[in-house]
Image 1: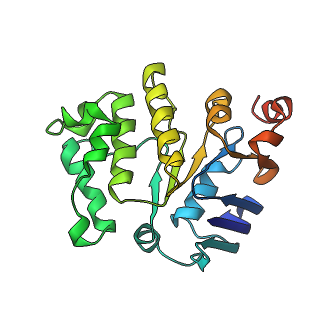
Image 2: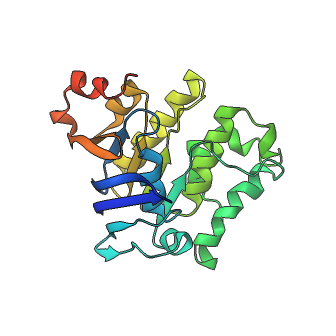
Length: 231
């Protein structure tokens, strides 16, 4: 289980997060929602170690990881699919996938067959450069690269951004399948309400660097959530 407790985060003199609490459980999808600029990505960066928290504690499986580097967190089973995908455009699909090997022990440094079961299109494109793929295919590659690390916590920052509807459905199917296996927690940042609502077991809504609504999906009041998503 991931436990984020009273996290603050600053960029210089600007405070991006204020006392944020968040839990994400194995076997569940936890969706973080909110308008642009409310701190969602900052929270994800704090969790994966890309930006140091100014205060508060991050616990993973009971271990305090607040001060660990990103690669140390990756080796503990935390994988990140960033907003914008950030694949390597001049490297092949196969080479992009293999960059995930750095986080796993040498005996596990191979691309699991399951990756191609989840994303069949990638098997036919192993030799193609990442930059030549469509936006949707690049997103599938970014998720696959994270799964190569065999994570127990998969963090996805707006995976539907700029993606065609057919691939959004494929990504939804994969996320649902991964969570249903019961060995991984999925933490998802999303502005597309219907996508988040359909996937979520738990939700968290942010505004101005703070959590303003949270709870189980059964407790979600759509009108209240949508009020914090509209501009």
